Length: 242
Figure 1 (tube, rainbow, N blue to C red):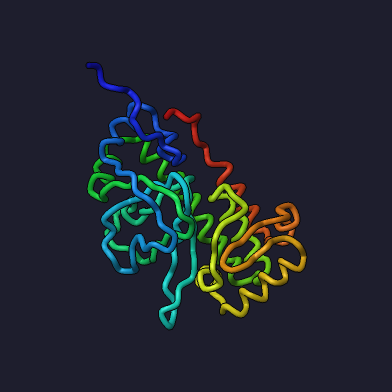
Figure 2: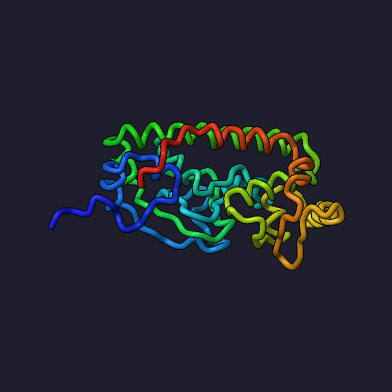
């Protein structure tokens, strides 16, 4: 019986979907589909990175450790990217914590298999290089945002980026989670959320958030959101081959 040219699991992940069919077919045998459960720890600071992850849905947050065992979000990755850039850059251990921020599913492969495939596939390497630049843009712009922009604008940016990756204006998020993401106390998060609610931009209640006026929320967000979004939209992903 001839070999089926198409794998059984489609790649909703945009990086995998950008690969030529033949290259993805070879890569597929090394990939394992797994669920991404909200709040699940993918890897910890200082931990050896055993797997790289290509989300098909959901979001993984990258958090940097700060004083008093607190964390600050430095990047979020959805189906537009992958988690495991240190491995791609030749580093075995992580300086960040990776945690599931939005439930979904991902395809993962071992770090060893990943590096072997990067050696064999120029297309995979080229696509991952371009995403690395995109994520670095997000990280550097987020650093500017944390330093110069008010909490309401930062919260609006974060909510919009999350909605973009979840492909939904409704998603769960607790004040404690937002506090870690934005690097402020829970009281500050609550105050900012109340302001956005009073402007009828969002509805936040009992750990669930709904964006109810996206156009005005974008006006409230800092310019960082537009810069990051423009960079992601400029990503030259070929037509879907899978």
